[in-house]
Length: 405
Ligand code: B12
Ligand SMILES: Nc1nc2c(ncn2[C@@H]2O[C@H](COP(=O)(O)OP(=O)(O)OP(=O)(O)O)[C@@H](O)[C@H]2O)c(=O)[nH]1
Ligand SMILES: [Mg+2]
Image (cartoon, rainbow, N blue to C red; front, side, top):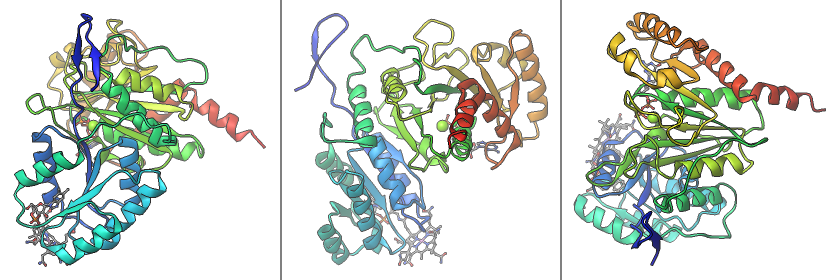
C-alpha cells in the first residue's frame, strides 16, 4: 500500500488515483451521442475521461492512449466496421509498446454476440451490448480497469514520459514540488490562460500547426489542464477534442485534471512541466490552464508562487463584459502576449479598442493580437506565432537548422 507524508509529518494512505479512460468514436462514424452519455456517466462516477471526439483514426487513438497513459480505451462504434477497426487499434497499441492497455467498447445493436466472440479472439477486452444498464457498465469498468499504474523500466519514449507524468500526479500531494527557471537548451514554456471557452485550445492547435510547418524536425508538448468536478472528483478532459494539427507524432499532448487544486493548474503541473522542459525532446511546451477568473495567476507571474512559464499568453474573447471587467483582470497586467480571439464576432471591434486602451495604461510593451483561431491560416494567428517564436528563440533555431548542409 502506498503511504505518503503530509506537510505536518503525519503518515497517511495515498488516495487511489482516479480511473483515467480514453474514449473515442472511430473514423467515418459520427454517432457520438452514446459515447457522450457514457462519458458523463463515467465522470459522475469519479473517472477522468479524455474524450478524443468522433471520426478518429486508429493511430490517433493509440497515440493518445500512450501519451495520456490511460487505464483503458473505450470505443463507441456504429458504422459497421467495428471488427476491422478495433483490431487496428490493438495493432497500433502494440506497435507503440502499449499492448497492456485494454480496449473495450459498445455500439448498440450494430455489434452482435458473434462479432464479440471474434473481437475477443483478436484481443478486445469486452463489448457492452444494447440494453446494458449504465450502472452495470460503470460497475464493470471500475471493477475491471482500476489498477495502480506504477513505474515500469521497460517503457520508452512517449510511453515513459506519459508514465512519468502519471507518477508525478500520484506524488502531487507531497510538499516541495515547485517550478524552476529554464536552463540553457531546455524547452521554452508558454503558459496559456484565459476565461473558459475563449479559444485557448483552438489557438494552441493553430500555433502548433505553424510550429510543425516551420520546423520540420522539432517536437512540441502540450499540457492541457481541465477542472475536476468538485462533487464526484471525475472530469471530462476535453481539450484534446480541439486538437486537429496536434494529432501528430511530433506533438506530445497530455491532459491533466485539477484534482482539487484551485490554482488553475493541477498540483502536479510544476513537476510535469519540469519533466517536459528537461527531457530534451521538445523545443516548445504549451501549458493550458483551466478557464480562469479575474484574480487568477496560474503561472506565478506576480511572484506569489513559483514562476512556471517563460512567457504567458492571455486569451480572451470579446464577451468579457465591459471596461470595468477589463480593469479587474489581473492577467492583463502580467501577460507577455495578449490575444483577443473570436474577432469574427461583430463586437470584436469595440472590444479591441477597449483592451488596447487597458494595455496601454500598463505602460508596458504588450501589443494586442486580434485572432480568429477557428479560421485556418488566420493572419492574426500568424502574427501571434511570429511574436511568440521570437520570444522563444524559435526563429533563430530554425534559421540555424536551415543553415546546416
Ligand atoms: C441516434 C442515431 C443516429 C443519430 C446520431 C446522433 C449522434 N450525434 O450520435 C443520427 C440521426 C444523426 C444518425 C445518423 C446516421 N445513422 Co444512425 N442511428 C442512431 C440510432 C437510432 C441510435 C444510436 C444511439 O445513440 N443509441 C443510444 C445508446 C446509448 O444506446 P445503444 O446504442 O443501445 O448502446 C448501448 C451499449 O452498446 C453502450 N455503448 C455504446 N457505445 C459505447 C461506448 C462505450 C465506451 C461504452 C462503455 C458503452 C457503449 O451504451 C448503451 C448502453 O445500453 C441507431 C439505431 C439503434 N437503435 O441503435 C442508428 C444507426 C446506428 N444509424 C445508422 C445509420 C445507417 C446512420 C446514417 C448512415 C444514416 C444516413 N443514411 O444518413 C447516419 C450516419 C451519421 C454519421 N455521421 O455517422 C444504422 C447503422 C447501420 C450499420 N452500422 O450497419 C443504425 C443501426 C440504424 C439502422 N438500423 O439502420 N443516427
Ligand atoms: N467564432 C469563433 N469560435 C471560436 C474561435 N476560436 C475558438 N472558437 C470556438 O470556441 C469554442 C471554445 O473553444 P476552445 O478552444 O475549446 O476554448 P478554450 O478556451 O480552450 O475552452 P476551455 O478549455 O473549456 O476553457 C469552440 O467551439 C471553438 O470552436 C474563433 O476565433 N471564432
Ligand atoms: Mg481548452
